[in-house]
Length: 195
Image (cartoon, rainbow, N blue to C red; front, side):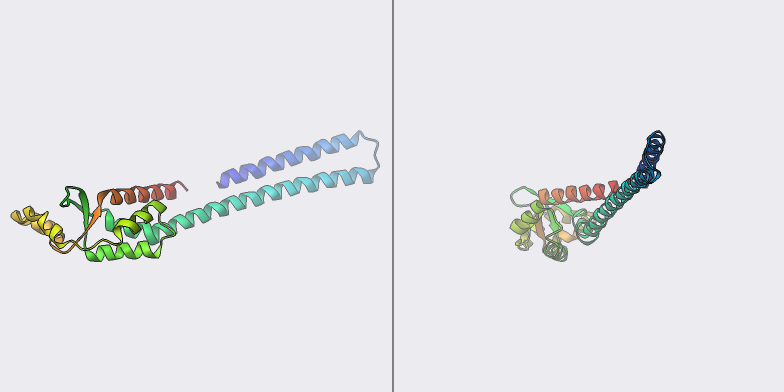
């Protein structure tokens, strides 16, 4: 962005210099008084300087605007998307009683998820927020689902230790919500990187 700005200033300066030189050559062959020649030359110089200043101001505005977008995205990622992603990206999937794939969250994880969605509704994507408001926020703990759907895990001691969270009361989060959030998070990260 900085090199683009420098190129714009150099181009504008060269054009201004060309206009001033062309005016001097033009005025040399005119039958005007010296004060008239000087007034015309000063006017063109003033217009040229104003053009360079306007271009510089525009460049500063564009740089400031870009910096503001970077700051906003960084704020969104730090306060909302990053913490929620850290909750949802490692979630373990299982099937509920209906045979649907769900992610299992412990009460502490669900509480942190609810806190982030409640605190930053203005940051989150509208569709995700509405999905959370409609379906996720009001979820009740399903003790039987978390135990009964994973009773087979008890047969293998290593699997039991790995999936211990299923034995605690848990919340069943639809896989579609988790995947939609992860996709939105990745979009935000990519937007941040491209700025």
